[in-house]
Every structure is written in C-alpha cells, then in structure tokens.
Image (cartoon, rainbow over all chains, first blue to last red; front, side, top):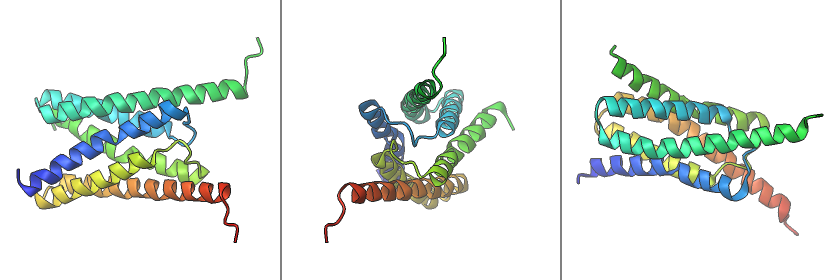
Length: 96
Length: 96
C-alpha cells in the first residue's frame, strides 16, 4: 500500500465511523438538544444518494462505506426527531 | 449530465453542506450538550486525511468538497470544546 492509499483508507475509516460515538452518546444520555435535525435530514438524504450512486457504478468501497454511515446517520436522525417530539409534547401537552 | 452523475453531485452537495445548519444552530443557540466531541475529532482528522489524499492525487472535486466540510467540522469541534470547557469551569470553579 502506498502512502497515498494510506491517507485515503484512513480518511474513509475515520469519516465513516465518526458517527458511531455520536449515536452511542445519544443512546447513553438521551441528550439531543444541540443536534441539528436539518443536518441529519440532509446527511441521510445525501447518504441515500451516495449509496444509489455506488450501486449504479458498482463501487463496493462506496456501497460499504455508505451502508455504515447511512445506518448511523438515520439512527441519529430518528433519535433526535423523537427527542424533539417528546420535548414538544411536554411543552404543549394534549388537553384531551 | 447522466442520471448517475446527478446522484453523485446531489450526494456530494448534500453531505458537504449538511454541516452548515449544525454550525449555524450552535452559533445561534450556543447549545452543544448533545454533540459528541469524539465524533467531531474523528471527522476533522478524517477530513484532513481526505484533503491530503485529494492534494496528493490532484482531485479538485475532493479538494473543494473537503475544504468546505473541514472548515465547518473544525468550527463545530472548536465551539463544542469551548462549550464543554465553560461548563466544566462552572461546575468546578477555580478557588484561587
């Protein structure tokens, strides 16, 4: 492996797995106050596009990397959206 | 432009710009409680590697996309680290 490829692999591994500690932090603490729903909506949609592109050009590195990040990004998106909804229902409870 | 390239461009634009609303949210509210410092440390290091890789293989799309994301990711990292430090100094004030 050349030093150029080494930078590429390190980059792919670090950026793909970076969402793992964020997902873990939310699962552990339930804290989603500072997280942007717009960011994770754009990121999840972007990852769906990358995955589609990877499938269309049959690029296994693109497919594998984006399956991992898409799973983590959509998990963070779901938990953040759930956090916002539960906060909203506490602020404006249904008056039956 | 083919429909395959369209997916690639949409993916690159969405994922690169997705960090913009997160940086804006922190600048507007100062809220960083739910944000993972480990995520943004890994992401910033990964983006430095992508940028180095882009420069080594002289890929302008890689260079441009990663200059944008690296700037946004390092801004979020700095603001989150500052938020943690200020919270820590409030919890354990210097007794000088």
